[in-house]
Amino acid sequence: MERKTAEAIFSACETALSGLTEAERIISEMTDSGERRELLHSLSKSITEILSGVRAPAVIQYPDIQPPEPRGEPDTTLDAEEEAFVSRLTDDEISLIDKALLAECALTWRKSARVVGATLDELSPQFEEVSYGYLARRIIALVEAGKLVSQGDLHYIRSSEVRLREAVVGAA
Image (tube, rainbow, N blue to C red; front, side, top):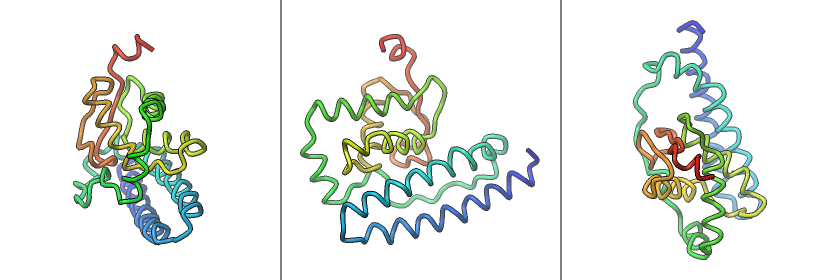
């Protein structure tokens, strides 16, 4: 792809992501938790596709077109409702979540946002209240346990990547 095309794609994706971020803010204020959860789930799938399927190829070819990302609140920050849900998870449920995260990883680098989005999609029928922030926390735990290797800042899923450690693949 030509540089000019990559820059235009990147710019268009940023515009789309800005609009989706505004939609996320509005949806997060909804009082019906079931409807809110369903809409946020759909939104996360859309964001994942834009980031990994459209914007990433342009950035991979021309990394300098992506300016440094401004830091806001870390993605690993959970609200009170999310913290309450997490505190009720059993060890078996956490293990299932970790297995789902690992299943979305490969020996090649993948954006943490892609892994989180795909896992959120996979887990939604069983764990409707699992948030992307909690999944980001579990990625950190998997890195600390030596099951994943990372680069970037794991507290910001759009600014980090993970891959399987070779030994994990052989043990599966």
